[in-house]
Every structure is written in C-alpha cells, then in structure tokens.
Amino acid sequence: MLQSFALAAQSGWIADPAVERQLAADQVVVTTVAAVDPARPRGQIRAAVRIRASPEAIWSVMTDCRQTTLFVPGLKGCRHVAGAADGSWEDIEHEVHYSWLLPAVRYVVHARYDRPHRIDFRRISGDLKEEEGTWRLIEAADASATVVEYEVYVDPGFWIPQFLVVRSLRKDLPAALAGLKKRAENATAAVHRRDARSP
Image (cartoon, rainbow, N blue to C red; front, side):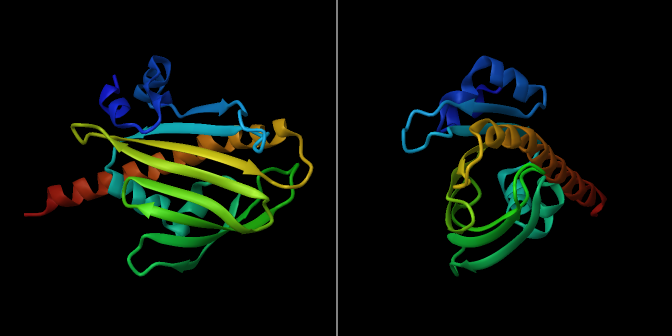
C-alpha cells in the first residue's frame, strides 16, 4: 500500500485505507470538505493522485504555463506576471472558464514555492472574490512514485449556488490531475529511454 506516502503527508486524509487503495489503483481521488468556517461557507475540495515520477519532474510540468493550458480543463490562459529572483514566489494570471453555466474569469494568484515539495497560493486580484489552496508533492520512501495532493477553496464572489461550484471542481479536477500524471510520466519515461541509449 502507500504507507510510506501517508507518513510523510502533512494532512492525514490520504492515509485513509480507502484512499490508499484508490491511489494504489492509479485512480484520482476527489473529496469535498464540509464547511466548518462561517467565513468560508462554500467548503473546500481535496484531490490526490499517484504519479510514477519524481517531485522535480512533476514540478516542472505543473509550473509550466505552456503545458498547463493543454491539460487543465477550462484554463484558457496562463501568464507569469512577476516573481522572485530566487524562485521563492511568483504571481500568475489565469483565465478560466469553469463551466458553460458560469462566466469566464480572469484573476492573479500569488504562489509561494518550496521546490519541489509544496506550493501555497492565494488570489490577490481579479474577478474571483477568493481562491486559496495548496499543492503537496510527497515522494515514496523508495522514490518509485510521488503522491500529488491538492486542496482548494474557491468563492467566485457572485451569486452561484454552492453545488455548481463544487460540481465544476469535482468534474474538472480528475481530468487535470490525470493530465498532469500523463505528462509527468511520459517525460520521465522519455528521460529513461534517452539514458538507456547513452553509451
């Protein structure tokens, strides 16, 4: 099972045996966290996937705007606005069309990096009222794979029933994480093939 991942996780939900089984079966796991904070009535979404690649290989894919627009549903634009010279943070503009039921939105997030293990991000300007979340990359003890864990809170700031926001995220997150998994594993396999051909 994935005990070696669970011991390293900062949040305990992926240690649940049912979640471990799904991750071991290469499934994307998505769950809704009930709202416990009155200031955040829409609740949160958590997701995770197991990827046969190193945290660094996954990081290279997930922080590359040119690639993310190709596999993240609804992401129509991604642009680097500003960043630290040491790579510790970055401001990124996103243009997202969550659903045909919802209007397209444009906003900027501030992302703080602990490469290649964690990204904390929050909305700093634009159409959304609030978006805040975390990416965690948890490598197995034998370095055979990495569990990518994602948690996000979104409040669009305009009147939309909570179930529509949650439904859109629950629909798009599996596709986004499956796309990340495919690209990172393909890139890793290509490196292995190239290394195998080297004298």
